[in-house]
Length: 92
Image 1 (cartoon, rainbow, N blue to C red):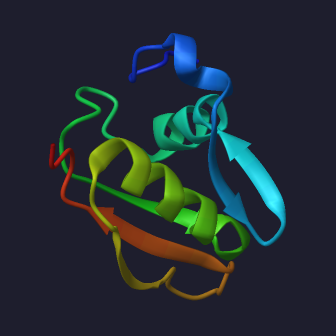
Image 2 (image 1 turned 180 degrees about the vertical axis):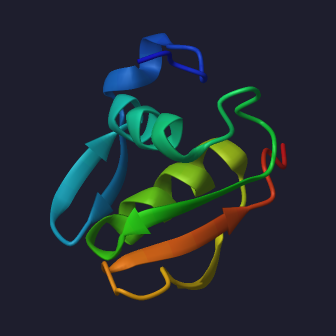
């Protein structure tokens, strides 16, 4: 997998704790790489994600883009449990 956000020395830093689980900067980078625009990680994006990981995706987007993604709805029938999220891209 190509990393769109450059690796840094601070990758082992704990960036978020969600429901008792800690996530490092590197963990959040891997999550962002799965949902962001593959041509430009700073660009706006939209992705369906499993509902179980929505809080982690939100944390990754907030960490790297400085913005909270919008929940736009559930995937059309048959229901898969995936949620459509949209982000405005990097807001730094």
